[in-house]
Amino acid sequence: MSFQNVTVAIAKGRILEGAKTLWQQSGLLWPVDEDSRQLWFAPSPERPGMLIARARDIPTLVGMGIADLGIVGLDVLEEYPNNHVLQVADLKFAQCRVVLAGQKNQWPEGPTRIATKYQRIAQTYFTIHRHPVEMVSLSGSLELAPVIGLAPYIVDIVDTGNTLRQHQLTEIATILESSARLIANASHWRTKPELEHVRHLLQHEE
Ligand code: ADP
Ligand code: PRP
Ligand code: MG
Image (cartoon, rainbow, N blue to C red; front, side, top):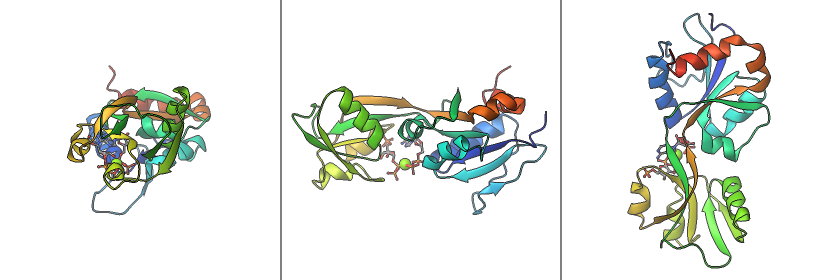
């Protein structure tokens, strides 16, 4: 089957590194050169077209049908949901948790401030728990917030726990277990059988 009519959008950073391994194990040619700034690779007979974009933009690019498929973390899909996107596989890499963390292993008493780059996930979580919070939106280095007195609690990604420990922070609750997902434009998934073929290759199915 040809890849000529397929484009995959892949998130920069950790997802791109994990996708490279999976892609090569699947026997697909990997065209991205780490030293290059090239963000777009036209499809060839050996592999789909590829575009490299910021993680939070992947649901939009796939939802609009600019890319047929996308590779992005579940955390990003939950934070930036898109009605035109389907999750078609758990690719099992980039495993991490979105957690509530603070200086003590103690649920906040009364209204509190939360620093996060996951405003939607955090707000939904505290609404379900009927706990009033004020969100402070940061785009990275969340573990700084309690240290500098910006907010006593954070909602952020944890993997090994090293970054939390280095800032004397502790996990209070797990909000979401995340890993890299293969997503598809919903209408393209119905009309392009080649997309199922790519899913099959990336999942190493017999
Ligand atoms: P960003 O600039 O959005 O932080 P990253 O490359 O650090 O980009 O993270 C990309 C995705 O990888 C995240 O959306 C999440 O799913 C996952 N991730 C982030 N941090 C970690 C981590 N420390 N260990 C494993 N997976 C992670
Ligand atoms: C991510 C995340 C945590 C850290 C968790 O940061 O935001 O800070 O990894 O991993 P650990 O539990 O194994 O220490 P990243 O390195 O991606 O930096 P960022 O703030 O720029 O996203
Ligand atoms: Mg990061």
